[in-house]
Image 1: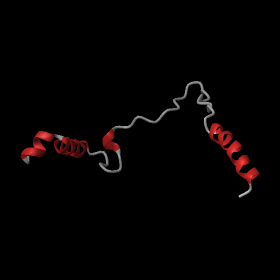
Image 2: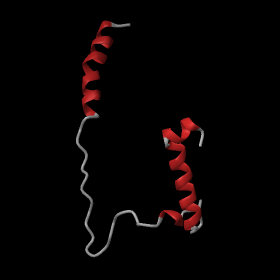
Image 3: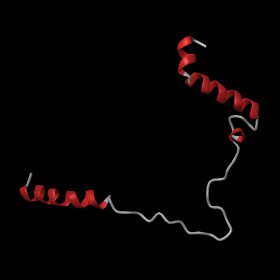
Image 4: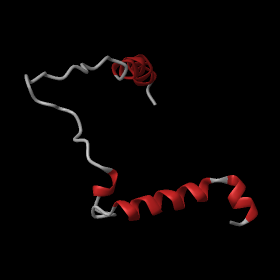
Amino acid sequence: MNARLVAAILLALPLFVAAGCGEQQAVTVFKQGTYQGKPDARPWDSADFKGDKAEWERAINTRMTGQNEYVRIKGG
């Protein structure tokens, strides 16, 4: 490889690395009177549970039981 090419690459590399460190604008445009966030829906209204709150509660309790180390060690 040519020594000039290697030197050019080594000199350009920090510029490319530093270019990724720039601060991006994080401010959104405010629209008067409208909520711009994520809509707040009930967890059991998802496609998995189709509005069935009892089924959602059973799924949460099953998950909670599976994460309980005392229950997992004793086998139930």
